Amino acid sequence: MKKSFWRKYIGDKAFYRMVLLIVVPIIIQNGITNFVSLLDNIMVGQVGTEQMSGVAIVNQFMTVFNICIFGGVSSAGIFTAQYYGQGSHEGVRNTFRFKFIVCIFMTIAAIALFLTAGESLIMLYLHEGAESGDIVKTLEYGKEYLAVIIFGIVPYAISQTYASTLRETGETVLPMKAGIIAVMVNLAGNYLLIFGKFGFPALGAVGAAIATDIARVVECLILVVWTYGHRKEHPFIEGAFRTMRIPGDLTANIIKKGIPIMLNEIAWSTGQAFLLQCYSVRGLSVVAALNISSTVSNLFNVVFLSIGGAIAIIVGQLLGAGKMEEAKDTDRKLLFFTVSTCLVCGSLLAAISPFFPLIYNTSGEVQSYATRFILIAAVCMPLYAFMHGCYFTLRSGGKTWITVLFDSVYVWLVDIPLAYVLANFTGLPIVLVYLSCQLIETLKCILGYVLVKKGIWLQNIVS
Image (cartoon, rainbow, N blue to C red; front, side, top):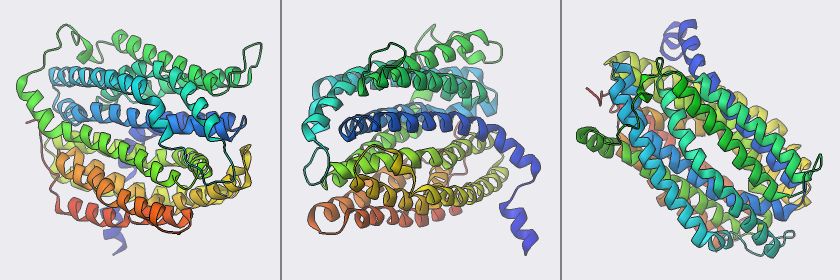
């Protein structure tokens, strides 16, 4: 029995060596990025609840944009991984072009939205009903931060186009290095510009936005220059911009299989923003506490997020090569690996939950809420890991409309109505509202298990 279990769910040394070669660089890059975001958050949190809350609200919009860009590059990414597994450089080149075009269009749309409706969007999250926090000041800080951070979204979109293609073609180290350098630039800029060190002006939240913009430009330049300097290893970049034409059959396939991914990410990310808006009706303290909780939780979440990305790459390449049984076996072991790892990560997050909020210069009410929100995130982390793994499994085989139902449709039909009703029409404490909305994800885990078990994702979409 033990031997059978071991063979079914646990790989050998060669398996984990292969997995870690892909996962570790992604974890390091994302981990450092989130660690610096955490330090950013702490630095802004030292200058007051209002600045921290204003930045947190705008960063929710930036998160929506970032996830939309992720959806844009992912829409073609499933084809990139399978083309690379097939050895087709022209196929990779065409998917790169598709990503670039989609990201530019989304960036233009986002800039137009933020310039015309930025203040109205921020106001959606500002409600009375807490012991701490000045709504007028929070609005002003949010507007100032948005006016500056908007300049960084163009280099971010370009960076993701290059970084995603490099990862899907086996180059995970360079995006990691570029990310590390960028976050170090960001961290140094924050220290200098938030607090006004070494003769620089003390700009608070605006200083954090300027530092982020500079870091994104640095990351973009590194990725672009390096890729062109290594044309032989990455021939997809040769002639990539000689024309922006993409074969009609590939465009049709991406629209059929890939665009649902992009639409899903857009719907999911806006759904998460709407969930925060539901919680925000309980007061500015809840917004501040959720900001603290999500900042530290995201640092731990990079583990299952990175393993999910690895599932998409590894399983996608096996499917592209026609190795169906190996893909199924590999996926099962990766799902077991991500859940097991997150049991450990969740325990560590739970252990620090009473202490982390004390770092912030904010009220006792905010700190108390944050502690309990962090503990809930820690308990639910293995659940999130399994859901995320199932999502990327289904996506790797091109079952993109099913992932839309599994992911964003579930958020809008189940999570949001539950949060809206509990937050607006009941006297249930906000902590229990938040806990209820996290535990309802158990239904999605059951659905994911059934869909993956059926093997409907086992298909080659580029043959």
